[in-house]
Length: 324
Image (cartoon, rainbow, N blue to C red; front, side):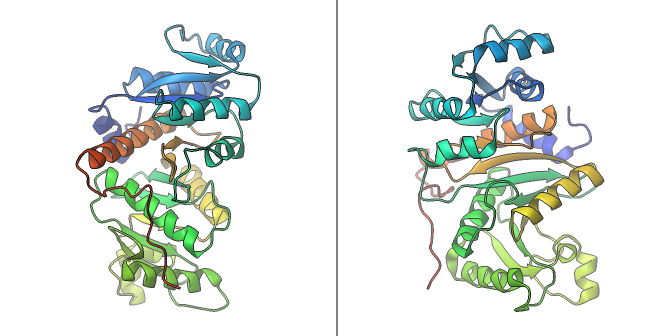
């Protein structure tokens, strides 16, 4: 389903080598949401548990001409909060290893997770893995879906979540660009001031396993030619794997511009809780949902392997706070 997207195709192929991820699919009452769960199951990526009003799920399946009789389900009242709470209960009981968002508001789902024992010491944040046709590497854009205007400490959590995810798909030492409108620090542009503070905290050990630099304008983060022409010497310029945006609005614009103007495709998950949350745009394609399942599966299996080896490969429950 992803012939034009080699980076996403690679993670789907790699994920298929692992046991499927037991996943609570919340409110799959819309065709794309249910079809994504069904096709991810057929691909061997997830074992879905359909959570929501059974009559509406079955009506959606009939419209798709899909047989869901073999899939386990939990019947809930006709609203998102109750279905979200049930998905949390499935994870806490060990019946599910991940949660997948269907046709409900993101805040209903995330509120249930954050207000439960699934919450960890890490701030939850969203990461899009974006595959742009013709671009040499995948890009991880964060946070474009959960944190509206994160503070300095919140952005450190956001960076670490993205770094952990990039490592889970094979990027050993991700290069992180903290984006701003320009590469110089200007008091008139708060994101540039914050970017240099984040860079300095990362240099002192506030981010594990990555090279962080900023402020960097988008062209400098992506293009070595732009960095050379502008005379910017940076270990990240032109080689960024992770793009840390100033706020949710700018991240949302960046991601949707890539999808609708550059024909990109993306996979999206929320990290920082004790289970990953598969969360794509409501207008996202079935292919995007399948790739997101693959991303969650690789992340979860890497975390399990690290725990088995007693290695701190993914730091879900600890975080180095910035120096005062």
